[in-house]
Image (tube, rainbow, N blue to C red):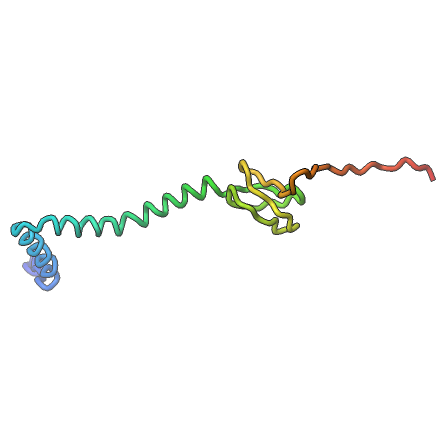
Amino acid sequence: MSPKTFRFDLAKIRPWLTTIAIIWILGIVGLGWLVKSVLILIGLIFLLPVLAFLGFSWWLRRNLIQDKCPVCHYEFAGLNQTQLQCPNCGERLLVEHRHFNRVTPPGTIEVQAVEVPSNSED
């Protein structure tokens, strides 16, 4: 093996050695708490976005509802406990108990129209 393969490049190692020396000196002087708090802040900077993403995806799985419009049977998504409008027919809907319900004034009775064929003999 040649000595060139084990040659250290001091310019690449110098920043790391300086950082380690500063941390070591701060620990000796009694400012180790400062080093620990900086390391905790750096850890939080990397950890908080991951936790926020996981929390938001959990919340979205619990609150995003996929259902059909009770009027036109168009399937789309909405958030639980919100009021929205069907993108197909424009009917105002309320998302309750993981289903879409029509928003109707109190006292309104829902009826289902049924077509009856006529038996006229012409």
